[in-house]
Image (cartoon, rainbow over all chains, first blue to last red; front, top):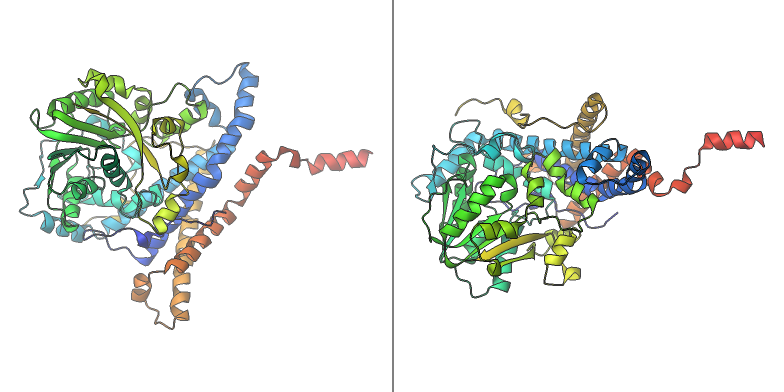
Length: 409
Length: 120
């Protein structure tokens, strides 16, 4: 057994809007995190072995040919007992995470919503628009089995969706995103500092910001910039804005808008960012959104996106299946199509010059101590990322790392 | 504040058809309940660990003291280790199935062997 274990839930970074968490709620999150880690580290590798040693050979024998695509792998795997166990455990763990996170928030929802309302009152940095309805891509199924998605309320004007999301995030990411869950935002800022040290954006848009975990590292890194965070969901934005205020970040504006209808003029931003956003949208939104981004960027401006990498021609069949799994079984329906889209073609079609496109990989920026010790055991080395990663420094990696693509206008 | 049914809302189903992975949905139901019971036992065990640590330190044990308890790094590591070991114990059969899959040569059937020996 690995001697390095995930941090305990009491180590989660707290802020002025964090819910009170009892001893037993903490213990529940601890168990669920360990359960999630166990099935990921001990059981999941076994499903690959089951695929290679019995599922694929049985298919070959029955059909006189090899498996052709990940849909065939999915259908062949569904009868495998080890896979069934892994998938059912993963599913149940996710449901328990959602239930536990929601319960923590629901039992103190009045108090938390009042605290948020007090932090939000009279601030022109929170702009909600009741005309914005949940976009179709959010409304059809609840992403990653989060009941009510980002936009539902239990009481008028509450912060349920945002607060429950943040409360349970630790279980699913198992502490790999740093104490505040902002590992991707911190990674992004570090990437910019290393690659483009002279880039000093004055006006920044973070699209699909959610509760703002990855927005605040941007705000921190560019204290003189005007930062605008956009999301479609009011309860999530109420929470995000109050959270940023409670953490002392006054210089960020949270605006409710759909990515399909952004209320900003042309040439109005120096940097437009999305972080793990597109996979929860749609083909139409990606295409229209990238065009709109091109329009909203000032000449010389930058757009950057942390997202699932596209499949490469040589991405193995098993990896295609496991990477598409969330689309079929974790209510991330667009995830699969996004793997197949060529983001460079999409960016070019949106108006960006092909010679202005780039991609790469960036590594989670994790604070030293328990989180970093733990995260260093988790590195995912996917072939697409390896190729995109021009740091050529795999051995020294300390945590998760992410694919990103972008362009200069 | 508006009265809400906390338990019903916490249990809310996410929008979208739930996938079932076991061949029989009844197995999935029992499995899911078993995992939830296992979770609650782990919660109880961590609470007991806290009580023991408070007693050992000569501190008063109360609900407030238990909720306020924060394990130091060593205690946190020991508690996480307990969770890891506990999960290993309850998933024993699956680990043994996985081991059998890894080492097919170690899966000789005792029944076949008994018949073979008897026939010799």
